[in-house]
Image (cartoon, rainbow, N blue to C red; front, side, top):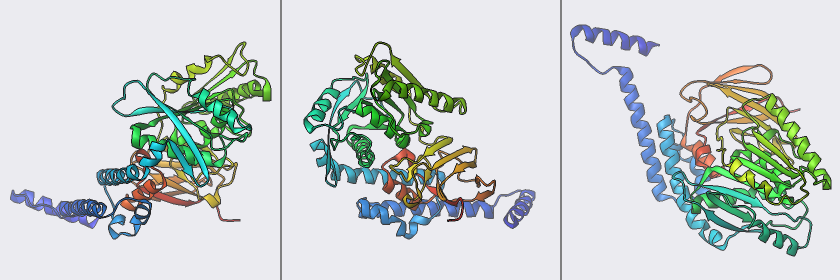
Length: 427
């Protein structure tokens, strides 16, 4: 307030005298702008001397310049600089993996095949990850299903990718390693085939459909839409589908394991969720008359239906239910792995610069922030489930951007600031 008063008096005096002298406030602004520009320059110099491997990226926060407050524009510049350097490193490090068409995680291997359709859009290609059927059977059976899946669908545009499951178990598409493999698949296709990360879709038939029921809710923040064909949901829940399109296709006569009845049940669940949340839960449920487990490719209409959706990277409302395969991040929410429990439910929304945590079963939660979500130049208001409202002044930093890129190769989802919250005391 004192600076404002001095500036007002100073400008009044010089205006009476008929000449102009820069104010103290404008001088402070210029100094701050110069300091920020210098920080970006230091970052560029640091990048020239350090390849952005996992270690350098994860320790960047220890550099003094990484904690300097950034403007929104400078945060974008820093994100681009780090993204470009990370991309350069990963392309070199992962070229052999991509050329081999096989991803290896520990002692598991996931071969993959893909075919490109149509002309590439300026913003990048669409990606369709299509999971084969089979399951708890000899490897030869799943190999045959893998080959069969390659011929099932043809998008007008995009990359149609079929992975071969890493195991031969009944739950081959929803074990905990699948999430990691799919993260790697998406990353590789962004790096080497210019895939648009906002146009990633998953689909699957039979056991592959089982996987869609499970993976779509827990990986929704990486997807634009998903299509489930002839599968069974087992214990999965649909709440996490709030911000993606979700299609269900089952033969009306596919009564084995109650697949048809479960499809109807999920249709009603999604109807109810959408009735209470008009802007969410876009879905289409089709039971194909006269069809059993094989729908004679009538389900192929799901492919163009999915392409009507683009990923919501920073949605204004999130519904998150932890699966038994626990995730630490979902959209702009983060929970420590040790604090995540299967079945934990979190409902959070944002309106302007006000965040409301409507429900949170976890004891602690972190809000990941970006100017794509709200205005970080203003205070952020957070309302806890208890009704307590707190105001936070946050700053964008290179350290937070680097942390985000270290956690996930996803430029659009990079956060530049965060707020750690204690929802309730440990019991």
